Length: 464
Image (tube, rainbow, N blue to C red; front, side):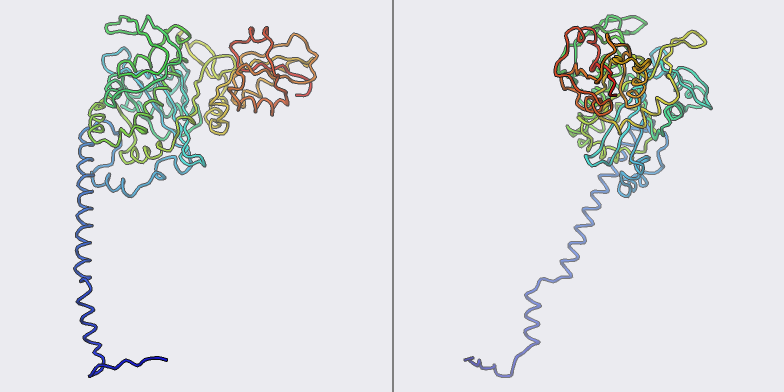
């Protein structure tokens, strides 16, 4: 049963109910206006901060950027409207940057490049960003169709003398020799490097082995002694430069190739200090860094490109960075020679090897990251078999120290001796797959003594 409720006299006043409802509801127009004003204020503050920060940056970097687009507003617009996909090379998932180090004023040969590193970044992979560092020795023979031939470290100086285009000259030579587009270059001199490291509060570097250099360059063409202790060390700017430049160290650190590996360590340590320790999130620190660089650094990257590139670097794990040093070791891509003027040179052994290394460094990243060294012994009666396999393995990125005959030529199965005891699994897997070989569970003492410089010894059998 439903109970009827009496209708009030005069019926229902719908107009009154509507008016009461309006009085109970907050005025929408007024609220909307408040939201708009608040949003405008926030946007204004953000723009003010960005413009102020950008003006500070521009005032500190007048001589750094070679091709900066004019106008603060243009740069601000690019920061907000451009993405990391707009960086040169990003569309092909391969950004190549040439890193150059020179002595600078007050140093002998101020514009000769003491450091040459190709830094390649793949911004988009299933594992995040990936990076590779290829160190080019300064004594390597360089050749360009338009610029001629010379020791590669002289092309920057040549470009500076002619048209103040040292960076462009170096990019052109590297592009032609490696068949690789170089999208940007960054050049820094010794003084700027010291001030930069100090500005980011130094770096942490793992020194693999202690060494002393009794012939390190000192002012007025003198020498001094510098030493480094094994283990994790915190370096200031001057110590970092000494660690990077040392060429006559003891304990296996007395070569340009050892120096190149140390320079790669420094780049990784700088990345860690800038990215993982959030140095770039501190405005005061940024100001100090840029002020320190001044005339000592030069690049053809735009400010907005550097900001977007920093976002890419955040996704690159130090554990996945591939390091490659071009050298003249047996199986390496270079050999020793001399120029027409008698100058010592490291000469590419052919025209294909350097482009192959640059092209394939990510495709066989496990091999390049492990940087394996192999000895091949021919255990069959087939003449030249070890040399044939050497060429095959070098194409895969392995460095072959020696190709020689085994003590006997009656092996029916290929045997692989792993002198690393499993520390280079990618290389081991490639060798097993490519050569159809079996990994021996033990390494004979006499074989180990004869091949202490190798990671793997391969005795070729008839099944390969």
